[in-house]
Image (cartoon, rainbow, N blue to C red; front, side, top):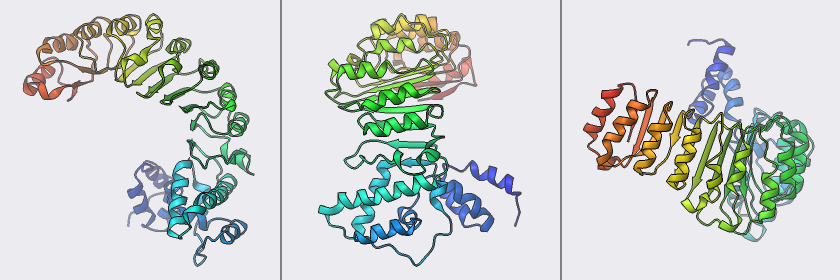
Length: 398
């Protein structure tokens, strides 16, 4: 069998981080492959029972005293908890509940016992995980445990780079992170719920290297004062900003889009709005110039065409990627006029507007790919011929 140098083998297996089935196969090749693969495979918690088997004896005793039986016939080969780099709290809770149902824990006691198991798992991870990279902590009725105070939490979380969280998690969680992760967190995703925790603004204020921000707003009754306080803390260091707003959002308490004007370093701006009414405030944003903006995406709905065309007039020249589903002819003409340097374009063109497509291909000389919505109405052969006529290197997606 061909023997790879250890460093070479490690580099190869690193590329398989997102291929769980292939990684698992690597575990079974031989001892050397297993030692390298297991560290990568277990960056995600793969098996709750295995993790529970890694608990210290005092934690196992706590579980046993609460009616949870743990198999002690096998000692874990590795300290799997030490390999963990990605923690999704909601998934851990779901796995614990499944584990307890198998043990016939009564429904009346399920929440209480789940909290006990969750506490011991958190203690293990905070103590044994040397450097967590990504934490997803969205609210459930069981997530009031502020594990950031557990022994070892500072060492575990000091290099945390990506955080996804609900806005109404206990303030203590945010306060602790604001002391630990000032320079490490560069990507933040916030789900705005009815309540915005006092500690969230403190955390955002503390983040010195925040570069990527996503905000999800889809609940009723968010207080405008809390929203304004929160967005005033977002730093100008952002290079990407995405905002999602659902249909059920209460439009009198939405994030005012005009605040985006502060992010003068933005390279990517993404809107995921389910109705064009959600773009209240874009009338001010249309006049703002973002000198570094390269990617602009409007998923689902986009602003009124007049506003968007004015925005393209101010920001289209440097755009490399533009995504929009509007089929307005005036918008397509604005792309031709204001966006000559596009590399990737997603648009909707009607069957009788193929001449517009030709003009786009002539004007946007650097296009590498184009995605067209509404393809079922097209003469696909004719469409392909148009693409090939102007550039055989452009990738066409229908």
